[in-house]
Image 1 (tube, rainbow, N blue to C red):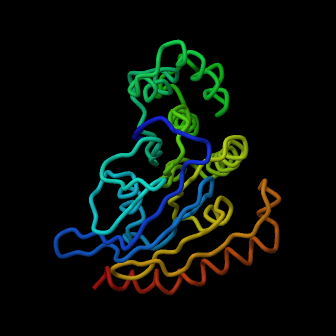
Image 2 (cartoon, rainbow, N blue to C red; image 1 turned 180 degrees about the horizontal axis):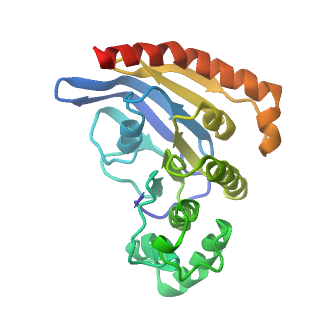
Length: 267
């Protein structure tokens, strides 16, 4: 996880991507990406492996340069911007720090005073369900608990934008489902703009207000699908006929592209 500042006003978090192209030498990863994410909206990014989902996320966070323009709340991104937190799939915890110190890390880096850290950190540890584990080290916790700690560290800075790169990919299926609904619960309590990269179509439809599908070589935005499922979402959402319809719509679009990509990689 990287942390790049403390959020400002409550309605902050509007992301604008215009004409974005990313190249590595002769390889063009994606081309002419136009994407708008509204404040407090969750946009899920899906697409075949290698289409540039993670690369796009890193460009939004200012970690990678690209041709085109990215702005957050009207300010052009040329370096990691304030008010943005990133959660990666491999937890990114410091193994020599306790849960408390891992969660407090971003606040200390941002220069928050000790009294405010002492007030804020226990609240976010509690929010992700880790109360009682403040003194535990990462090696003493399960993968799900470690990812909860990483999420608490990101949330503690109260970001206006939360970028999530397959945050539940490294845990087992049961834990993944638990964490999905935990994140939805947390988002209902503290809505923030979220861009959520995932390989799971079910996860994308469950989490997102929209699902954006990247396709092609170089990739581009092939579909931008509104997910008109009511919130709050729960396990009952998974059995809603509309959920099945939306999942099938995304999957049908991706299936042929994924097959073509396999043959291209094997050539």
